[in-house]
Image (spheres, helix red, strand yellow):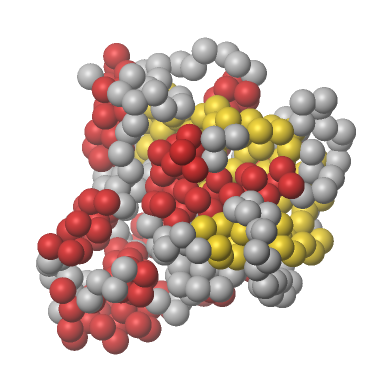
Length: 382
């Protein structure tokens, strides 16, 4: 347990090396003609990597109730001229940072450090968009691990990059995410053709993705963060879906859930507070009723026939996402004839999975933009 907490500390110290203090843009009123992906507000964002500029934006996305909502994102663009066909777009989808509005990566420590592979993506000439997801940075409740919301936020961030002056983004894009972000990446692939048919998704890359939400909340294993992830899910879904907390965990757990939901996960100090606040949940039974079970199943990604190629990276010492879950999902993709590159990483845990696989993911994504036939590890996964 101590070694796992130390690993999380190391991950947070890495991403939190620099503190960026900016105020979040406030939502602008929606006009009748606003479309998903329209840019509402912009502000220059300091601290971009050398040879690039960054902008924080509010853009229009679509709520679960099909209403327009404002979502925040960073857009990072290389200074070099764009190619004639426009820049490829890389959508980074972040791991769990919390469910409170203040937990948005664009408002927290070192957002550029959280985008694994960013230097390679900028060197390749991509425009990089990093959405905060709905309810983080923007108004409303964050639909944590709600796939439709995450996928829409990702697709509309790519649209927004294409409408932001000076970015010169083309229609081709790839997605790359870690943990919650891997969940979001897989849902982006599910939604892309129907929700954003004008865009062209060339590939989906995910490190230690959440593919089975039921297993995540019901099987604590040895993960010191399990209580926090359970709190985030129960608090969020009780607000988003009206699912009663008392029908998945004991009523006595509600004060712990309310307290933990206010904590973010972006620095070592926040981690310590989060672990302390969530500690009473250790050992609490999780018994979802029929409503909860339906929601848990509906928010697990489902491989689709004819989907884009997929890159999956999974460490074999992951206490959050058991490796068999990711491998099983890879096999399900293979059954739908999706080319899968499966990167098994010996000795790698959950918290470093994206950092350890970022170079391989960047190379794989570059090949997808270049039109190279994707590698396929499906025969080895049987």
